[in-house]
Length: 161
Image (cartoon, rainbow, N blue to C red; front, side, top):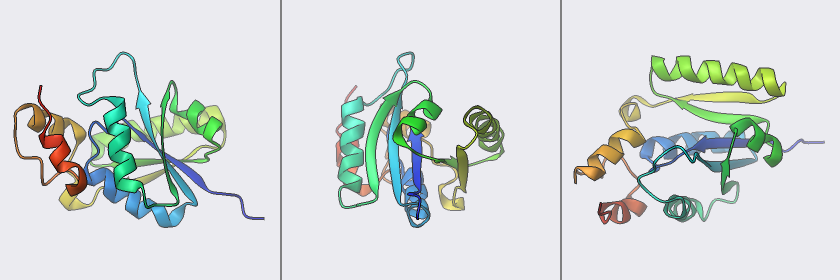
């Protein structure tokens, strides 16, 4: 019997970037289902609303049968347990990301006993892309077209602070 391979790709996706899209596209062949899960932290200030971020993800992945969109509060590992996911997808851009993500993955595995983290190394042409940089550009009215999916670019450019 085939156990359904479900992976969670957690993040704030504030906003989603071409780097995120690339990781999801590369992960799709490996899993039966990928849940893109927006983690919300009441202590964190987001540039874009949760509803807006969910809407973007739904727009981008509406035709993808194996991709679901969700959101959660609290620990990622608790969400994974509730969602029946045995895999966590994380992107790695640089050594600092790796050190941080390795530690978190070891803690998650130790606590759950079965949550495997699958790392995707950013493609060289995307390794400089981060939501943080995109937010800075948006706030400074800069051009973000090289960093975000074309389908949501106009929506991001309409953002007014």
